[in-house]
Structures are given as structure tokens and as C-alpha cells.
Amino acid sequence: METKNIMIVGVGGQGSLLASKLLGHLLLMQGYDVKVSEVHGMSQRGGSVVTYVRYGDRVYSPVIDRGEADYIVSFEILEAARWLPFLRKDGQIVTNLQQIDPMPVITGAAEYPADLADKLKSTGARVDAIDCLALAEQAGSAKAVNLVLLGRLSHYFDLPVQAWQEAIEAIVPARFLELNKRAFELGRNA
Image (cartoon, rainbow, N blue to C red; front, side, top):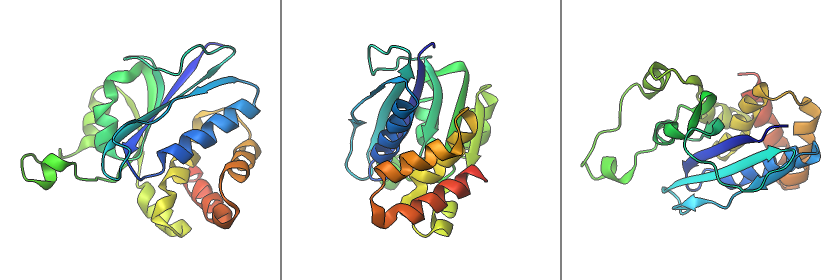
């Protein structure tokens, strides 16, 4: 199988590490060679972060270059726009509609761009944009945005739901398991 590339982008503190770890585990359990990168960027709360998940028959590097991402999974819509040049021509964006003001917006030096979902679509990108924060809160915690996003992403993979559930059970701490399963289902069914 040809190597597939997934970029997970967002803002520090949103759970992108757990998402990439869970996705890596899922794909490894399906028999793929998997490489997951470390977080690049400001991993402190509020800074831009990106992780790479690559899988296939044989993967030699965890790095994804411009124009190579099959999927961009974005925890925050401005981050989807920031990393758009990395999406391949026929790639898919799965993004949370949540807006988190970056420092230039907070200080008044810039304005948050309006209508980002429409602007992303106008580039020709395939965009699946949902309010993951509202669904996470419905599941029981705003911190479950990562599992809502993975639930939504699961639509684009030919893997049984049971495999996703087993990966969640293997990675998520027991005390948060039911909450995260609910978040995954809400994202999957959104």
C-alpha cells in the first residue's frame, strides 16, 4: 500500500497528542507500518502545534512535506487555513469550527479572518467542518474535542468501528473512557 499522510493541527492544550497516539495505535493494530511525529511548535496552551501520522506497507520518515497530506485534522479552523498548503490536491480537511484567537488578535494587531470554512472550500479543498466543541460539551467535557474529531475522521477510513473502539479502550485512561466513547460517537454521527 502506498503511504498515507495525516496532519493533526491545532493549538496547544487541545489534545492533539492523544489523538495522534490513538490514531497511530489504531493503524498499527491494522497491520500497517506507522510513524508518528513529535509535536512541532508551541506545545504550551495557546501555541500552534502539528503532529504527523504516516502509515502504509513501509514508512521511512515521519515528516510530511507541502502537498503531501491526504488528511488535515484541525482542532481550530485558522490552523486548517495555516496548514492548507500541505494538503494534496485531492486531500480532505476535517476541522472543528472553533475559533481560538492567536496572540496578534488578542493584542489587537490583527483581526480573526471571517468565513474561514467558506474560504477553505473556495480553494477547491474538500472540507468537513463541524462544531466539535459543542459536541464535546454534549458528551460531557470540552476536552473531548479530539475524540469528536477522530469520530468524524473515521468516516473517511475503511476500518470497522470496533477497531476504533478498541483503540480508544487501549489509549484512553479508564476513568475517561465512557466520556471519550460518547464523544467519538457524536463526531461519527454528526
